[in-house]
Length: 484
Ligand code: BG6
Image (cartoon, rainbow, N blue to C red; front, side, top):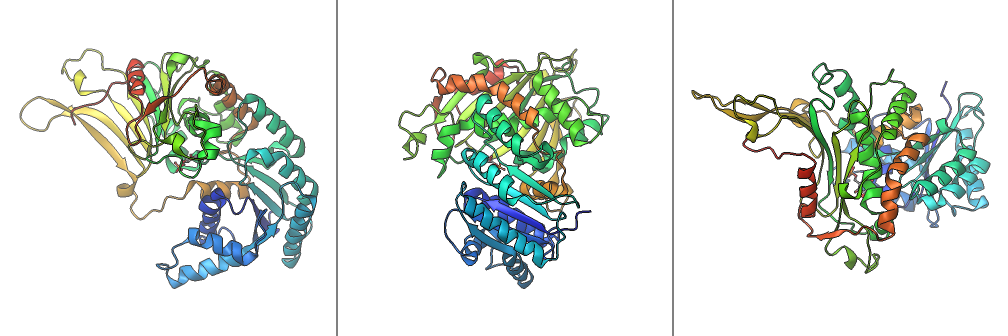
C-alpha cells in the first residue's frame, strides 16, 4: 500500500522546463486533490544559492494569474507554495545530495512515515550531459528503502542522447543504477488528449478496423508547425535540430500508435511490445525522402554559429515494411517559424474505383486528427450538394472537442504524465528498447546532416517552409482536397 509520504524533487528547478511546465502541472494536480498536503513535499534542487522564498517567488507567476485569481485560488496557491522547499547544490556534489536526502528524510519523519513506505520521485529537468552523475548521486545518497511499498523513481526528459551510440551509453549508465520500472522517459506528446485517444479510436471502432491498411489508405501525414523560431533557445536547439527535437520522438511516437498492431491487452508491456515491433519494420531512410530547411534569420541568434547547418524544418518519409503498410508513405513534417502553430495527423484514403459521379477531382476521403490547438477530429467525405441537381461536394463529419465537450477542461500533457508516474503506470513512457530503435532509424540521417553531407535550404519565416517539401508531398501521393 502506498501510504508513505511522497517527495517530488525537481532537479533543475530554476530552468525553463521546470518553471513553465513541471511546477504548473504539479500545481494543477494539487488543486484537483491529487497531491494531498499531508502526504506530499516538493523540493527544488539547483545550483543557484537561493532561499525557499526566492524559489517560490520565481515560480508563482507561472502558476496562476494572481491579479485575476479568486480568493479560493489564492489560498490554493499559498498552500501549494508552502509545500515547496529549495535545496542548493551542484549536480555532482556528494554534499549537495546528502543535504537533499537529509531534507527529504526530515519531512518524511515529520509525517510519521514508516521506513520503507516513503515514495521519492526525482524529476531531471536537466541537460542529458549531467544525467549520469545525477543518477549516481541519487542512487548513492537519496534512495529510500522500499520493502513496505515505498519506491524511488527517476524521470528523464528528451533529448535522451544525440544518436544511437550516445543514447545507448546513457541507457547503460542509468540502467546500472536503476531498474527499468523505476525509469520514466517522458515524451510529453504521449500525454496529449488526442494522442491518448488513438488506440481507442483504432481498436474500439468497427469503422476503422477493416480500412486501416495499405488496401485503403494512400498516405499518412504527421505534421507539427510552430509560428515562432528558437527564441532564447538557440544554443540548445543548434546542437540538436528539428529532427532530434520533434521528429525522432514526438512524431515517431505518434507514428507508432497509428501503425502498430492491436496489443494483446492494455498492459503497458503489451502496448510497448507492439510499438517496438512496428519501429523495427521501418526501412532505412533514403536521401530522396528528405527535405531539410532553415529559416532565414536563424543564424542571427548570437548563440547560433554563423555557418550553422542545423535544420529548423524537415520533412522525412518513413516506409514500413510489413503486411499492413508496405507502399504507404508516412510523411513526418516539423518546422519552426512557419505560418501557424498546429499539430495534426492526416490519413488520406485512396480514390474510389469506378468514379461514376466524376467527383475524383474534388478530393479524397481524409480523416484528420487535430492535436492542437482546438482538439478535433473530422472526416472529409463526398456528399450530394443539397438541392435539385445531382452534384457532389466535399463536406465533413466534424467532432470538435470545444463544441462537443463544452465545459470539460482538457488536462495538460505534463499533468497527466506526472500522475501516471506517481501511480507507476508506464504505458505512456518510452521503454529502453523502443528508444533504441527510434535512434537506429534516425542516426544515419543525423550523421549525414551533422557531417554536412545534407544541407538545409533557406525558407522565409512565416511561410509554409521550403517549396521542395510540398513537391515531395505530392510525389509521395498526397492530393490536396478542394471544393468545400
Ligand atoms: C518540445 C520541443 O519538446 O516541444 C520544443 O523541445 C517545442 O522545441 C515543444 O516547442 C512543443 O510542445 P507543444 O506541447 O507546445 O506542442
